[in-house]
Length: 109
Length: 111
Image (cartoon, rainbow over the protein chains, first blue to last red):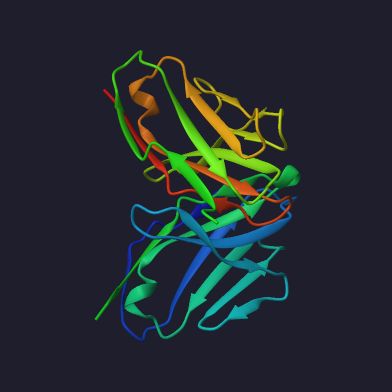
């Protein structure tokens, strides 16, 4: 079983739609959680951290459920520029990051 | 401020050849990392360094060696390349227990 699991997609949504991605992790001792965004043939970039109380950054909302070991990312009012692969990332001891395989999003006009 | 840079951007090797990938960062970060990314696998940590002169193994270290002789540089070596090492290699750096910043990647094809 992979330590961080994501649905690879692709999720095909129209502009303006709301879309949600989920991620599960297996290490209950994981300390921190992130969503990274990766554009085609580019490097990953931090989108947002995920806090236990849930957090929002503009159109993006991230939630963490430690009991279920589950992380989510909600994107409202999708834009064409949101098309990318979204990587769920978990930090364990020693500042090591473990990456999920990514969920691909395609926003269509 | 260039951030994290990687050299080369793309390389083709024959099986058994050797090469070194260079990662450089100008942010004075202590931590540096080498990952490989393969389709459907996510990024996997090869080796990392928590400071100048230190290195440690990650999840998939076999077939690779690293060196951190200067704080700003982290080198990844392949002594005898194999087709299984065909991948995209990303270097990253971080100031500590915080966000990792990635370089643009090196695409390696081993024939």
